[in-house]
Length: 116
Length: 111
Image (tube, rainbow over all chains, first blue to last red):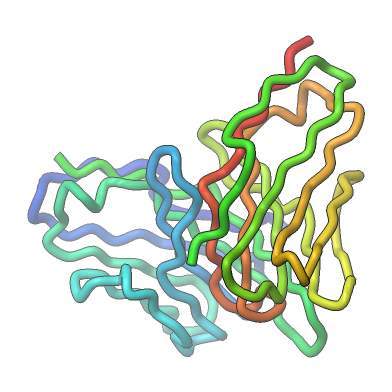
């Protein structure tokens, strides 16, 4: 169990550019979540996948944001036409959801995006 | 709706106890506690479920009052390593869906 990994760890981009982040979940985990965290705030939920199916998207996820998990393993989050307000830490988490109750989500180290 | 955490910040001496509260205006089904150190990922501490079940990975205790829609995290005999920001997250179910986090409680433990 190597934990959740994210790449890149830091990204600086100019306003208007597109960026893509990658998340590799814990290998046996079937659910993968994306959150965004700004300074002084808790993580804000963006979207999550059950295997390759995207089951829920937050209203925070504007049309410029798209996420996919094509083979039910790693996931990518793309932001098109970045704006300064997109500057944040983008966190990925994964969990193993089976029958029962109570599922802990394990977070990756995050990708810090700075839009100049 | 975002849960409300209190206090916003706590400064303690090593060995003292702390209580962090999390309350919601909506019915709670599950409460998830995390600790985050500066520049690091949030680390899972504990889940509390409606009905009383708890799952945790550290020697930290917590309570879940369904009637009052609130949870409290108890840190006893605090250690320097307990310093960080504590977040509570609420889930619609057991946490299988996305969580809604509070703004956090900053805990500083001094020697």
